[in-house]
Image (cartoon, helix red, strand yellow):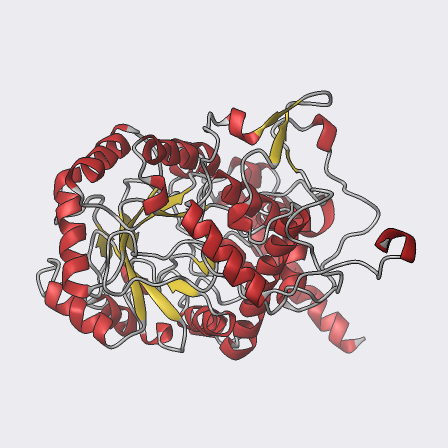
Length: 524
């Protein structure tokens, strides 16, 4: 009681002081009119996203990832039960654009019945990356699911390390992002080195691209391919800025810049200015390193793609892979107008680019990679049907290592230590534990892709064609995916040679299922 009697005057004095401050300030009319109690409005505004996320929102209401989607990723990462009971709660019949995958009663591939089937099965790419153009270090990627480009600086060092260790466990590739190749990328996972407009990690003292430094870098790291970043879905053609406060000595050393200063990524490359000079640079990099070289881009003006493919067809120069990023936004922070409205969403952007390549007979010589919420099985299956040979996962990989979709990536206050450089916040992220979860998620996604392919009578998701998927137009009508995007028969599939080889690889690796022993009547 004595403590309470002493506390009441202190609390009363504090409330009175706060009320006086609210009455005297001029920034907020609400607080002048309703001192102290008006602050409840700002509190509710601040915690509103959390309230909606955990209390108010339904299973399929939230964006960018719904509660059901996050639950599936979290359960997969933890090797928990990721099944759903009592039927779908999606409003299928009344959702135009909803994809339906058509299973086959009889098909070449017979899915095994074991619940654990497919967990440890390898799921390599159906194409050999760099083989079509004779690159000396061409290779077949061991996984159709790989980790998208997320830079050290945007992600914490512990998050990058967890993803790299996870990539090693899952046998997949990790894209470095444009922020250079850090010590955290050197934990066993194989890499795709991304070259951005600022040439971080391969630039000289004046910020110019340095071929010598690039060659030195890849000589000491497990880099399997080079990716030239033209743009990304979150902020196409915008460039980027890492504020000075986040440019630590470690980040500066990785990027080859001065510590404690704003780090600017220009909106355009200095090494080329049109498609012709871009292809020259691609061939230079490939000749000097022996590695496959590709490009990453969001999709806007199609004139670029038409000119690029025309030059590839007519001159013999070309990219080994094309990574199409959806305009839905991604891990990069950006102005709202860019996140919401600049560049085409994945399906529309990808199909337009793929058609441009296919019309010039270049689609079988090029490996196509997709990104943009493709780390969910339904989205990924549609992407494979449209012609993707691999998918990259970014935000889904972040969720697998602890991201809670707080959407504070741009504030340096990520509460789970994934997208921050704050030592207090990053200390809670255990790279070894989270590596296992990232690997579990990737393996589970591959397992589900394989299960769906087998249900469709195929040995590999890359063999799913556009006639296997239909798009609902409402309750009473649907349209085959091929007709929706104007594909010709056979588009979206690897070449006949590649199809034969991937079937051989998969049937040697993945055991086929079957049925019970037939009765004497059936046998006779």
